[in-house]
Length: 574
Image (tube, rainbow, N blue to C red; front, side, top):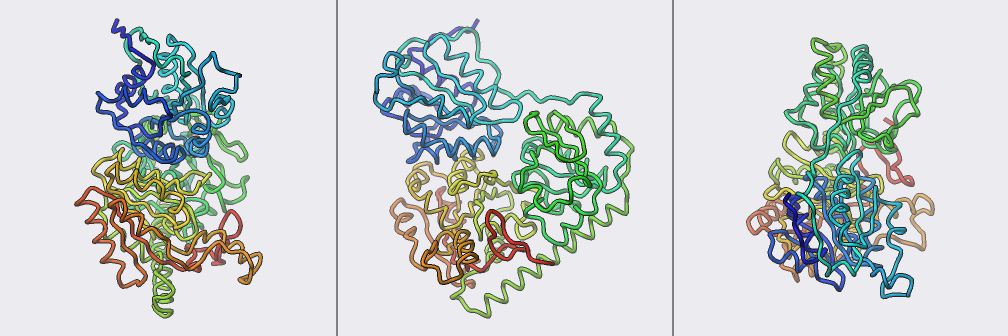
């Protein structure tokens, strides 16, 4: 029967983590060190963070990069509430994260016990499922259900609270641990036939690849499907790294990040096939009128269906759905005129991006080093300095948003990408990069972050040093919160008595040096290439992180935009 009895709850947790293949746990334990004690004799790493929010960010990065559950363990009370921003991000990113926390003992509930809190009520709005374990007999079943809920349907965070009195009580597991592999569903056959007919009838299809397609593109199934249809390929921001971006049908990132001339394809299309996208606001920003563009949307959970425009929702795994469509559409050939149109737009898009980058370079050269380094030049130099298998982890501020705009940054065929969700919490990318590096050991990891976001993360620099992760942090320094400053300038002009930016040292050099991390500063564009090559080589050779701080201009807006306009950038007329 493979029954087993453990001396306490946290020993059972440690064994379950081994069963999951969870090589890493992120977190900050409370005063009770039983989990660390239970892990002493195992090969499971525990990344001891300085802030619980960052621990959740790291676990989310780990989950997104690996496709496996990210595990986070913290104490009780304020330790749990500190995680909530991270839990919100994991939910929005559809990342399978298991958060395990301690809880007040059953016999002390309602007595004003130390750090007592109704933790289930606090966390329930942000998770798929939450449970408290007050009796040792329930623990094994709760752990198994938590993982099943986290990885199946629309993935997301779950919460397990282990009451203090169970820590020292024996826990018996009946039978072996259950499999933790997600179950990939095939859609209803009638839905597959109906949607395959609609796809065959389309003359100008677009394929939109979302974050739900991550780890679902074995043998380049999605590219082959696009070739069969002659469809243009776009991704959402979270879907990047799934598709080979050097494919001749790839035209960039959808919605907010689509600029001329690629945006014309959306006005000309007669069908969007959305694979693993919840069609959030940024993904559909700038789309044509809802009535004129039908969408076939493939998602794993019915709660992700969008019904405000014509089309069909398909509930199923992206890979299995596309494989089934490919069989049903065997022999189908797309409209060659549309395919040629897609190729022409891709070429024109590349030419327009080159013009924008050249104009930014010329303006910077004319103004002199005092204006800083053009972000387009930073991205180009970074692509040349770090191997093409790199994973780019991003934030979403003013200057760092440049990297969302293809082809100013391309993942190519071998590169990966991890981005924040619609919530865009500051500091997510900086912290998530640690989880990504531990999920894919040996793979180059670069985090491009604004100085405002990096400032929130800097308390974790000792964690980065202790973890021994070779993450290259490229910090774009525009003096603080550039996005907020440009919004303020739009409202109040440049003479406001309030300010979100200032021309002053960041202080990162001293902190990086104190923890044995590499640090470089670039103020002159001519120094950029050499510094980035040196910095990456330092990271790779020493298996440690490095920080390259690059001075950039507040006026260096992303392509096709003219600065911040509230939540979204203002569009240039083209």
